[in-house]
Image (cartoon, rainbow, N blue to C red; front, side, top):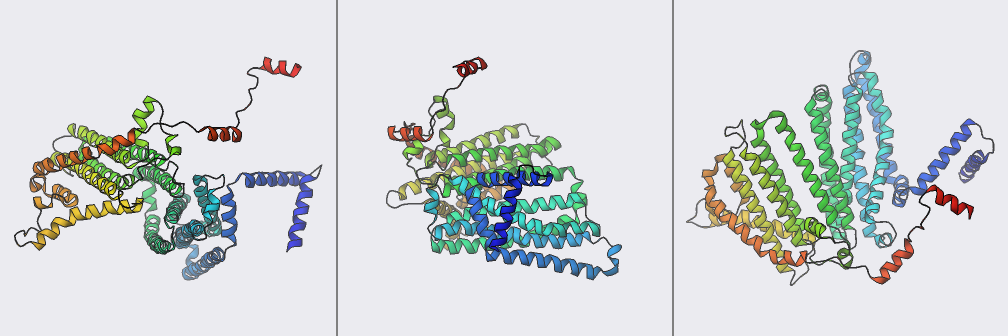
Length: 558
């Protein structure tokens, strides 16, 4: 085997170095040099991971199973259809079978391999060697992800001839196949980046087992759910592809997918970065972009249908924005409050930059104000749009319900995030509270607010309101808002609830101002002399060259 490979390499080198190569030799030489250049410039993580993955027993077995499954499915379907294969349009059934076979490695094997590639670095303690290289954390995550893409392309190349076979059986068009393959590729990429993020969370052995089990269950659930989705899309593809709103919805989904993908990629990079690096600002920038994309797409149905559905659009925007910023807020308010010198050297320096970009700086105080500022902006924009809405609406909540939903939702989120931040700050005086522990404290606080009144009402003989809403459940934001939407503002005494929740949120906001004031006083620090000298040696400034052709000619004459 070695002699054959060495002989082929020598013959290829002779063909490339031939002074008068023929046409095919010249083309082969250019292609070989191009591949060499591509390999030299490729991410080294990609090269290493691809070599390991393609040589692994797991990949070989999976690849053979996929090929055998495709062969068996091809012969089985043709045998079942029998002589009618020349008259019956069996392409849709075959496409469903091949798509399910392809979905198995793309949605199970490839993402789990990506998870193991990063989790094994933590297990074998090899990530420390990887982190001291010149590769950034973003390049490391990108290299792992690119290795998953290579595996995905190999599986696609194995099944694509079988999918092309479905055209011979009729009943399938090229656009349906292209859209379906696009869905599978996007699903595989999304699950792979999610698996990489899970791999960064598994830093100790006992947590790796738990995360691995949860990830396998999630991937299996996604795979079995995709079977029903694939079948539904293939059966209704003709009507879907002719609907304009189908393409509008897909474009909106693609925008949300790309922003979420960027957020997960930045989160995975932040998890494996050094503690002294700025791991929060890139995430907050992506959050702003994602919110802008979401709000932009929410205006499309309102523009098309007019003001008649504005209440429904405002309601949907409030639901998703509230859940989004509460979830992000639980993580942002759990960040470490102290900034390293490296982070301080990257802070905004100008007055304009400090005015507009201070809330993007790392820290729980700035993170809390970042969420509050976005929620306040959304509430003001929603109430302004509500002021132009008609008094009579077609379906959905009325104007009064939307008003209280926005104001009470803002108050509950500001209140619970602020209380959680105060609780985390108090606990950090005595013990170390990690990001995960801070997130769990937020969840426990919300569960106490929701379940405490319910337990109290069942335990007390004088309070028999367990099944009906009362002001005792004012700390339960979920029940309060659902009752508001189902039975109106009078059922929850909305003005009374607002007069309690609003001042409480304002008080909690003021209590957090002291910590916020400390964080916004950080100024940009200068680069140490030793570090500046090292940077000058590593990245010297280019020599000044001629600025016009006459100077170049003068230098040549000299």
